[in-house]
Image (cartoon, rainbow, N blue to C red):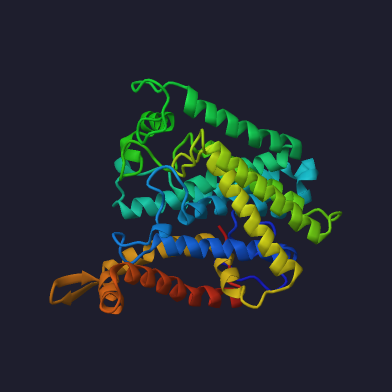
Length: 395
């Protein structure tokens, strides 16, 4: 943990992931920090319902094909990672003598995020290395961040655009044209598609998502299009930084790109369906377009119009994004270890509080939602305190 002074710049540290409040960056693009915090708060909300058996449909992931509001959270986050990379590294990439240092910094931060994910996973499964899940949200963030950071440092914008499109086309071809060994023709079904086959034979069932054992929603092959999502953010950030384009024109262009991207995603969905678990090419374009529109709207309201009155809670979440994500996921588990004796027998503190505060007066689905909202509000207080004290945990 580090408590910087008011004058300390966080531009470099924010390149790790959208995780540190860039005092220098946010002075130029507060909307990015706002959207980052809003995304993290949404992630906590959908990841912590009071009862997983009672959830409103928009707060659930798609069963397979399709896209719900909950499915937008992770691609929005990776998109923001890309924008952050552009702002954090910026023109330093033009000095080739700095490339080694920049790449080393990116590698170190990616390794820290990946290592943190492995440590937390080991703690949760009793240090059972034989059944350690390797993929996951944090590992994907780490891998995608490092690859895209290197691409941003080493390649031109034209190359990045070409690679963005090439990945989407190649991934579509691989998933829809290449036969799957042992299953026959190509298919997009759970457990029998090419991405699932690769995960099963490289990672093995003991190191994959425990709820399936045959495929992983953050698997190896589907990380390729996730790189395109992050590149989408890099390219968007590059356009936002242009000084020769008036703010109103920037917003108009961004909304235009967002509209075209969403339309392209919807058209591609007819042939290569949107699917978060497979991170399909149509999913990349659709969610990337919505993320661009979200950033354009935030940019216009927050940075251009100066409407910052109610942004502080979200800036606080965005300031320590990885920290609050980890804490929010493991705090309920830790509280569940504290047992409370009731007439129905011992209950974990998390379940006891849920039953006592929400289920006694709300319907099951509303109690579940109210519990999630209360949890987000509860976490807002320590995040606000850390933000005001300028306590930023660098990862």
